[in-house]
Image (cartoon, rainbow, N blue to C red; front, side, top):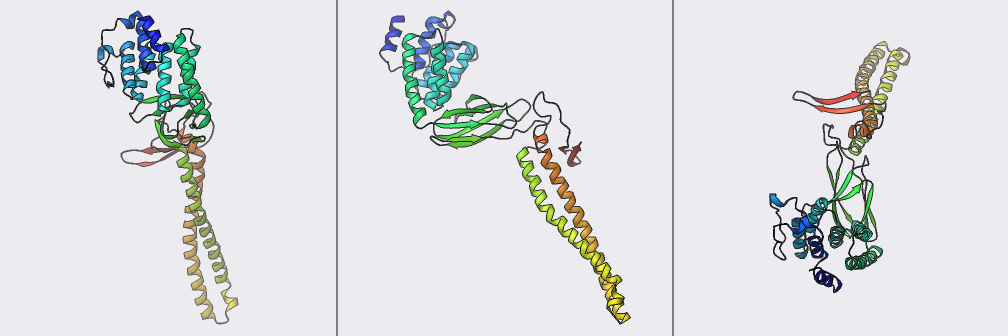
Length: 348
């Protein structure tokens, strides 16, 4: 069986690297060679693993081979990764790299290829095939690959690509950049203490696309981001400023009318006319003072609220700051919602 395996590799058989992986593992691992479950039928991609074999690396590898041969590279990657988690080996790294290569996830694919070559246990004929794959991949990377950069606020989140089948593949910890094929992608970010954030983007050949969502802490009462609160704070400031300015102007006019009412006797020779004019001025002054006071208070309150929300946006989305960081002094606004109330709590 061993000479036959080497002959298949050297002659460039139509079998995928995944099939070679399965054969090599059955030779090199006694535990895997004694698995009792037969391989799925060719060109059929199983979507179920029986409970008795979910921890069986050989069975998972066989499923990966079948999915790869059926052209379902996402499911093949899923099974290869599960098998590798249970029985790490250089050939499985090569199989993972091949699946990623077919999916257009070029950067990680090249890393898995290189990991295979760097392994002391790498098969000689298999290494030659991997070198050929790397040459093809390097040409693609130089010609038309795109760059997908994933950041997050706060950093340190785990970035994953979400495939159409729903499978996830981890790219690394933000900030991270991956070279990929041109197309549309969905990125999912996870971080302990924060809600999972999913973002869709499109990348083009020889360009770089950046996604940088703001993560929302589990402790936040509402599903809002720091950026959203900043925008709301700025709109509050913009809307409140003219209100406060109008209120101030009305108060100034009210003071002018009061002054004119006091000087009415000097402006009018007829005492009745002066008294009538004074009454009109005082009434208008009172109205202007009332409305001016209300507008000034409302505008000033809105401006203060906008300032507080703006400087509290990061604290709201990331209470406590980075792990291990000391708590900083400042204002913190926490929305609260109860059965009989709704509002915010302001802490200094």
